[in-house]
Length: 528
Image (cartoon, rainbow, N blue to C red; front, side, top):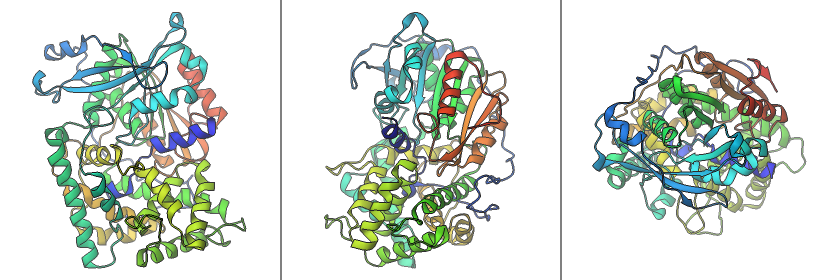
């Protein structure tokens, strides 16, 4: 179960959907992609501090804080579900426009020893916390934690079952995912820009005013409403990937109501979209080189036996071949294009447990000319079901990201100027990341957020976890988040994969469980 759990966790906490990234950077990476322990991050940005909200709850919000939840059985055995009402716009409260959010819980098995509710968020942004809680709680958390906490998942506004953002039909999404993300001509650039325009306009037409009110700050405020509705004085929380930004934002807004927070695979909210995207490209390069160092000594490695550099070139050659002539997959409407192949490879870099699948998929494609296995990996990443429908994460991810921070690049010329910096950060994936930045430039809603520093003064100890060779959230981001939080405690995992808690390391699991159960933090700077 633990192995399966790590794969599921990696899937649900995927931070970058490559086709829907919305930022870029025009500066060269200052570290070697093969050296994850060197400082991957830019110097600490000069971002304004996120100011706490007043402790007193405004009168117009009192009805939301005082609401009683009606629970009924749903989903997994032992879980209940309820609906939480929150205002669409916290600055202009109108009950006629309320959003209905879905929340699930499994009660603590030892109610007499209950510490409180333990909210969890798998990241994305946009992955369903309800699904995650119902699927993951039994294997992610040991019985001792489940005995003393209610396991709780809240689908953030615009995601999962909480009035999700909608953009394109399944058929239109199939076409969208086939779009060439590394254009080689002006005509292909025009096709990519048109695809981004169509996607963005589809979101506006199908989602309306909701697009303006699904920011991380608004979702953090929703969590405080839920805390009160659950009857807890403090909010206890475990967040992965983007879920660390959400949790840190909560701590910044409500430090006095912050309980035990675990932030695993941390993001640094001070970074601009430019820095975030460049450094994330470098993170995927680091993860790929780690995979390549495991693959190339094997006789069966389809990327050859010339080490990480040779494997990177072999993969780039393969991408060029499928760009020129996509591979059959058994579905005539969906051949394996370069974009789908890159997505499939990227997906498998989220967890070391997926590396055998990637080795087999690359061998099937490169040696047998069959792209079906890589297509399956891409479909898993894109949440495409066998019936042709897509999950909501592909829509919620750009909707939240583009609202939270201004786009990095505004046009194709800006991307062309940034290509060299991206390719230096990631020779294997840099071009893909660079061109994917233009979706937010086409976004129909102006951003309401910007990079911030989160001191969360007066909060209790907050446990921040970083993995040295994490593909999607580079280790330096965990260092940055722990540094800016006045009570941040950094726990390092010397390993691979996206996220550390839940089976990757007994040392990490023990530290987190002690923190959750006994409120005992590991020593700052501990490495597992």
